[in-house]
Amino acid sequence: MAYRYLAAVDMGGTKAEGVVFREDGEVVCRVVEKGGAPFDNGVDYSISNLCKCIDGLIAGSPEMPVSLYIGAAACEYFLPQFNEALSRYSFDKMRIEGDGPALISGIFGHTDGAGMICGTGSSLYVRKGDDYYHIGGGGHMIDSCGSGYVLARRAIRAALRAVDGSEVHTMLVEMLEEAAGFPLWYRLDKVYEGGRSYIASFAHVLFEARNKGDTVARRIFNEGAAELADVIWAEYNKNGGPFRLILNGGIFRNYPEYAAAVKALAPQDMNIVFGEVEPVYGCSVESLYNIGIHADENFRERFMKSYMAAKNA
Image (cartoon, rainbow, N blue to C red; front, side):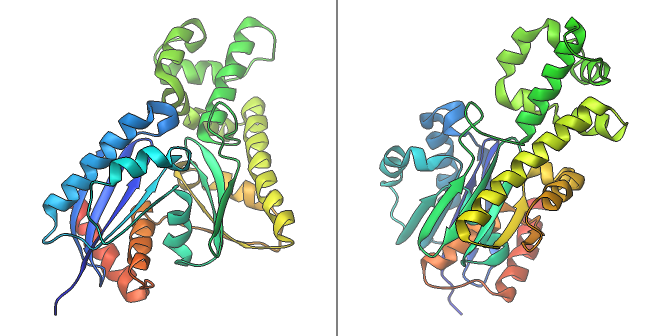
């Protein structure tokens, strides 16, 4: 049987991961390159890494894929630049969107629904027919409420204020110093030099301090969960009632107690599920949709089995 080949790329702040797969779901090629979100690294850097990933997929594919779908963080703000760079490729079908639709499609398929990502950043993505939008997710300088970056930044700020005596002492002081290997509050040059990703890397300290009973860490945890729940309530009110929602992202994945806290504060008639599906799978579902096919359970099972084999090779 002759199969058509398709390609998909998930482009995040850390990595660009792409796959080539047959229309029955069999993954035949996997490529990983550096990522880069335009807000953090500049659009040229993001596009360069994306094109390296696509070129690797084409080189590793048995034949030219007929479809390409790209889910790229914050690309919607830079679509002219991305589209110009992608115009040199000759896929029959090609789409690029933000990283929200792939999150939804990874669990619900190409149907209506919503997905909340909470990792270094955070946002709620909603798809209704051909309409797609997000609530929150304005980037770390504007609005990334309840995210790993925000939690870690607040933890560092609380420790700094405890050191200078303007707020109560917290075990975050000692725990952050141990995690960093030096007192962060005396070397803010290193903090600013490291930027968003460096600050976010200390989010684990906040959760560890909370688990040890630190009241300041518990307050920051609760504030973050409440902010994310407020975003869900905003869409609930806009929608006029409940909607399907998938929670995903590194913070939710590594700290399920945080996801549980958000869910407890959200409308109680919501259908909220947690999913650990790799984002590139959702991109693959959308690439298949490009050629008019909805992914079924057989596709999902074959994809996951062959993807893990490629990942572990």
